[in-house]
Amino acid sequence: MGQFKDVQTFVRAVRTAPSLTDIGLVLKDATRAFRFDHFALAQRLGNGSRLGPVRLTDFPDDWVEKLVGQGRVTDDPVLMASERRVTPFAWSNLPDLMQMNDRHHAFMAEARAAGLAEGYTVPIHVPGQASGLVSFVMAKGDPLPAESLPAAQYLACFAFEAARRLKLAVSGEGEAAPPRLTQRQLDCLVLAARGKSNWVAGQLLGLSEGTVHKYLEAAKQRYGVATRTELVVRALYDGHLSFVDVIGREA
Image (cartoon, rainbow, N blue to C red; front, side, top):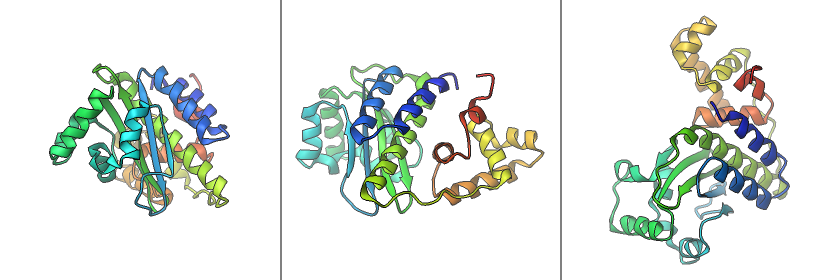
């Protein structure tokens, strides 16, 4: 991943951010560094149905007021799609992901008029703990920066995890002891973090492709996460992995 050192700089800053406001400022800087124009992070903890309690964004104030203050959240097809998916998606692909009605089309037209033309949304779900999304947005109809999309997934997951943990700490709940991973699970996870397929990881480790898949799925279950990116993020946070494991000593 060519920009992983930039992601590492972001992670170091966001992990030490003392408040949600500081996380938002770091995320704003990273958004610009990776050639997006705006960002939004929305997160709810537990089983509540409303958007929040964490909401960080640099969207235009008028649009935020329309979205939240006027109760337009239920018209937002991006939010609806993110609740049903675990993989990132571009806003231009929404009609392929869900059946959009007139209200949804009108909502997206209003978003474009407000300067939110195209977006890349990363849904994040931590079963029983938190769910939400992070969106990176282009303002003027420019295409999404394809070379930045892999980095955007990591930016999203780290920011989401930092906000989740900070919110738990403020509430006094704290974070439970991290799950323990077996050595084989860690071996497979390191190679997955480096972008290796299950087949390639199996060749390197002397395992079958199916066995690598089983080890990674077991690690995801222990952490209660839906994607490999989230698994890598949580393992980095908890010290199971280091950036040397992910990007190699030569980096």
